[in-house]
Length: 587
Image (tube, rainbow, N blue to C red; front, top):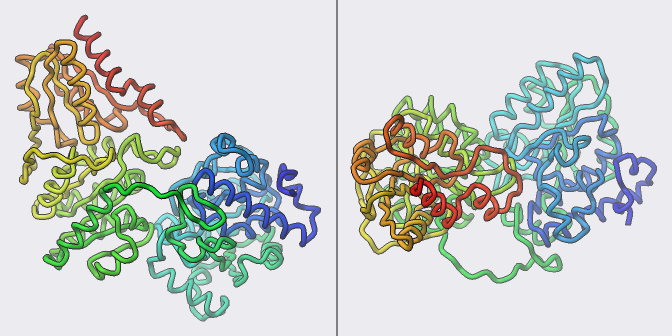
């Protein structure tokens, strides 16, 4: 095999065209080997194999700088930059290789930690400016695709690249897809450019002042080499628009591009996966509920931003919802401003977003939504320690972030029934924006009655009244609170258990009432404790005699962590929490 011997892109330079095509075939096989055994991004990486081979053949990394957007299309790049063992070896070797570009893994070839979208051009303009100031002459190449052009930062990056006016190469990897289908007006122009082979009168990139090259055969190594050679060492802002096929070379990924954007391990012979037991998910339950309610209320709108799967809106459900589902592409800031406008206009929008991606919207939530008090609803999915674990995708910061924004109610249901009760109330009420942290520990049901009405002033719910120790366990850590209470009961401590329900502010009356019969309050939250829910409670008690044990994850940038080990390291296992409580009580 060629790729086993390629330790750097320099090893490609002496190869013939036929040999480069073999390298592309072997790289695709290596990518398939990894994703079939380890899981990961399938379609984006398969579609960019030939382009990556050509880029590394023509340009001179690491002197020339590559910046990958989202970087879920960087697997071929990794194969060709000394990391083929992470694609050819056993799963243990694959675990050592991140699914995204990572300077900590390869400081020579990976220029940035990148996992969120639409950032590549902006990052590249920084390298462009640094090069210009230093007077060096390296090529700066941003690779953007998979719907990333719909994000606002991509527009800002293009604007600045044009303004700088010096050499930068932006490779637009146009595979006609985002994670799902593309959304946004720019994609109409990309389609027109594809259909005219780059010659249509209206060219979005030329209008911005870019030199422009189009290549229809974006999976042809020879033609890719030609077009990249034609722009190497350019002194002008230049766009190279290549038409590729998402999933290229693997029939199942080509046939169903959305389903194969990302996937669990599978049989590479036919794409089949092991039969998994059917389980309830909030995505399925929410989308089913919304479709039923939409038929009764034409003002109810399901909103997504490039990840309709977060809301359970599969292609068939999107079709059934029609105009009552809207996806604006990978543009979370647009989603927040738009739901604020929809709520102002008399609609009832519910935006569903993964915890890690809501981080991109702080200013819009504060300025466009909360200052205006428009009653839009936000479902925050996968918030907590047990979901995504790549350093760029960890989901532990939504509580500190959202709870710092005034005029936003942040609710934390503990069961399926409580979630839908909160959702119904949030949609009906007309005074404030409401966010709901959908439980991330699976669908837990209860036979107990749940409140159907909520207020704008936090009101905790006491599930069991005891003494000495009070456990306030929020959201998906509520069941952990129950387990801790059971362990304490075995030691003779009848702990009070409280479901706080509200994350953004404290129930002062409830906290004050605990002083009479308790000496320790314990808070449990599934996320970063710095600036979080528990610290608000600790701050409330301040200089009083009440002791407070805040249990959560220490602020850090964790990467590819083991969930159970992370809990253990932060003393978040039920037995550890119980032991810590007993030690405090003894003192």
